[in-house]
Length: 373
Image (cartoon, rainbow, N blue to C red; front, side):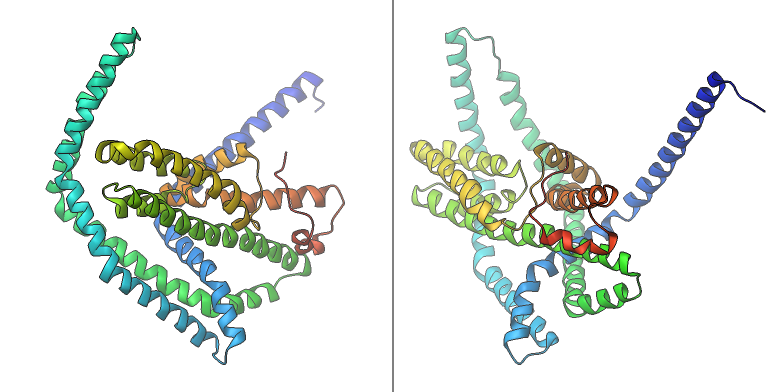
């Protein structure tokens, strides 16, 4: 049967719509399945990240000492447990005392914030600016009280959540130990069963993950440690209360790409304004200088092996990552985007004929890959 041009166009449109419909259905099924195993994937992802952070140290000990692989991993784990025990014996009690003091001074800080908000509103009214912040600061104490009441009434849930976190951390340590021990061996066995083309492409995957994840994770940990320590020195020198808790929070939050530096400053400046108002201006100036040095000088040097991607791709990866895996997706979305960007670049190279599939791994030896446009 011969179809007219109009009928062929309609048939083509129907086929395209059918393909799109089936693709959306498959995507919905895969998305639902991913949501069901997201917790497991997060545990393995955290173990993978932990093993990547420790791999260079383990490799160095393995090469430069008489210890075998097991001995090198055991030495590194022993050092980690010693550091954690020392932190638990000294740092944790101090942080717990500061958290207790912060809870005790909560009403006082809330009253101070309320008075400052009223004074600020009076100044706005005096200037004739049509801005009303009264609903905001009137609702804040009630919201804080509601959260505190919920936390106190759900003590069993808090204990259960803490136990779950401890159990997950224990699983992460075990899985990371196995990855450090046998990861390379299992990888060689797997790639040995593949064709030359697939072996080269999987080697590209391994190298891009090592550069994106390994460099990003190790660099973020170093950056967070340096930023948290510098923040502690600054705010402790000016007598800002709860300096330990604030510096730990800042060091952890600053590792979040893009939004982290902003979020790291807010609680520090808020507590400084309420608890050490005379130090607010110098602390603000020093923290701004610290962020400029860390993000524009120290950070790029630490992250020198990371893949540069376009800011739009950064935003997209952060939003999608947070949607899929919450905090961990927000934290690791950028290195995942780096790996994806590498394979987009590789696909373009292969389709244009500039690269053979057997030469996939050599892509990482070329000039730094720019974000696909």
